[in-house]
Length: 91
Image (tube, rainbow, N blue to C red; front, side, top):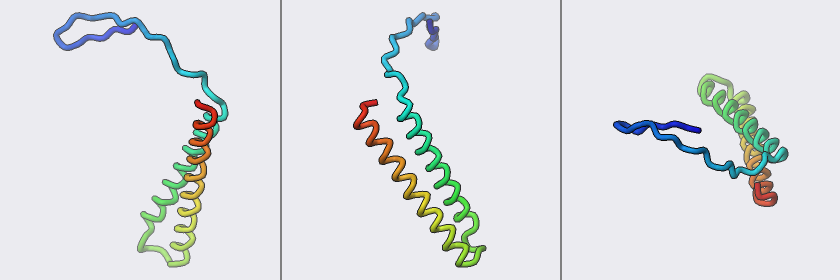
């Protein structure tokens, strides 16, 4: 049972509603973890380029921007795979 109190009101009890969520899908969880990891890597590499811009050699900049682009591609792929699973599996 959950209790809430509105300003100037007495405490009212609210009966919990039935949980209508579907059981967790292991494949969806795995795909969500992969997507989250890909986003984190993309953010990390982009932040490095941002911090080092203007203070690194062009070759280093080119390597880092290539890593950012590769991380972006992996992020987009992970997102597509997650959306395709949700569409196909309905979870």
